Length: 97
Image 1 (cartoon, rainbow, N blue to C red):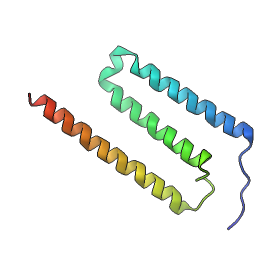
Image 2: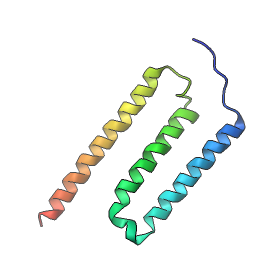
Image 3: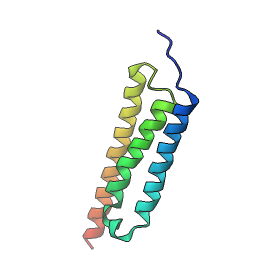
Image 4: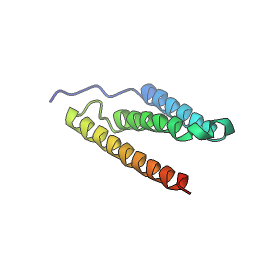
């Protein structure tokens, strides 16, 4: 297995800044009342992006075997699937009343 060059501290700082900006956007979206009906659908992509950035950069999955990346991505897709089923179930139950 070939060695890879680790990212520089500046690259980690840039990724950290991007993560902070996404977090600020998530909080801002939560506090904007007209966006309330879209809240879930706006926050999920931001959550997936943050998950991917953390996994790829801070967990070094960019440099590891592709199998590890696939396992992590499978996990996030399963989590999104379960979350979607729960949300749909709750919306269906509350709309029947």
